[in-house]
Structures are given as structure tokens and as C-alpha cells.
Image 1 (cartoon, rainbow, N blue to C red):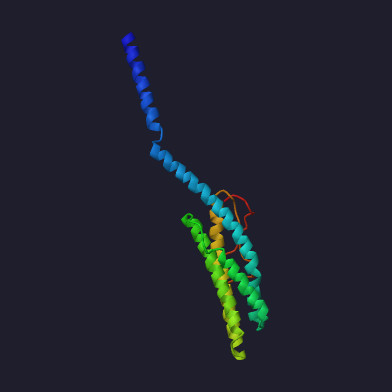
Image 2 (image 1 turned 120 degrees about the vertical axis):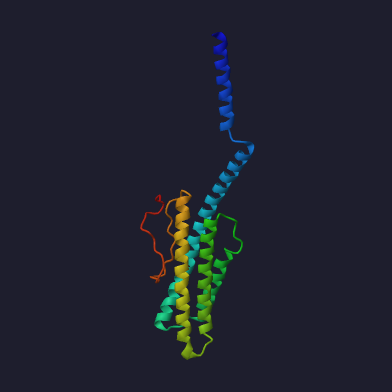
Length: 200
């Protein structure tokens, strides 16, 4: 009986050791887990920084886009000095996207969408500048084209803003609504009505 008890005890210890060893991650698995954790932390930081940059950029370009649309509706050419200031502002906003960090696909999509919207808004401003050099009868057409480009910029931004909202939710930051304040734009996404910072 004593021999049987010892055998059972030894078998139990061996089984326990095997189970413990099987449950422990290998050095390779542990390294992979650490890399994934570091990537997740890095992505959260990128999302926070991108959201802040989007808010600042939106504050800068919203008044410009709104003014372009209003001027086109009124058939009014803005002052040349105003257009030059707009162009300078757009260059500054585009510079922020010049050297983007490497992020996850979802974050890169949001960043790329925002950049595309700013580029489109910059084209709208350049079209307004071109209108000033056009013959007077054709200036209204140039302004209307600029307004269409500005509307496309708003629509593009809204898609990127929806993506930015989603990645913030996925990263545990809650809803972050970073949409342009430019008036209604056909086809543009709008905030979902959830409170800022609320979970998904």
C-alpha cells in the first residue's frame, strides 16, 4: 500500500509539473506578448495625439471653408490679403502631416483621411486665388468650383472623423467627435449623438 501511495504521489507531482510547464508561455511567446503590449500602448498614444491635432486643425480650417462657401454663394471675391493668409494657414496645417509615424492600419486610415481633407481644402483656397486672376465674368464660376472643393473637403474630413471616433472607442478613450464646423455638407457624416468620452 505504501508503494502504491508513493507511486500515486510521484505521478501527481509529475503531472503537476507537466501542467505547470505546459501552461507557462515559452520565451518566444512571452516576447511576442510584450511586443503586442508595447504596440498597443504606442497606438493609444498616437490616437490621443492625432485626436488633439485634428481638433486644432479643424479649428483652423473650418472658418476658411465656411468663408469660401459663403463668398461663392454671394458671388463675392475675398480680399487678396485674406486669400494669402488662408494659403499660409493651409500650408501650416499640411506640414503637420508631412512625416507621419507608423501606426496600425486603423490609425493610419484616420490620419490619411484627415490629410486628404486638408489637401482638398488647400486646393479650394488655391482655386479662390486663381479666381482673382480670371476675367471678371468667369470669377463666379471659379468661386463655385472652390465651394464644391470645400464641400468635398468637409465630406472627406467627416469620414476620417468617424474613423477617429471609432479608434478612440477601441482604445478606451470613449467617443471623440472631431467634425468640422462648416455648415451642412451633402453626404457628410455627422456626430452620432453620444456624449464625449462615453464608451462605445
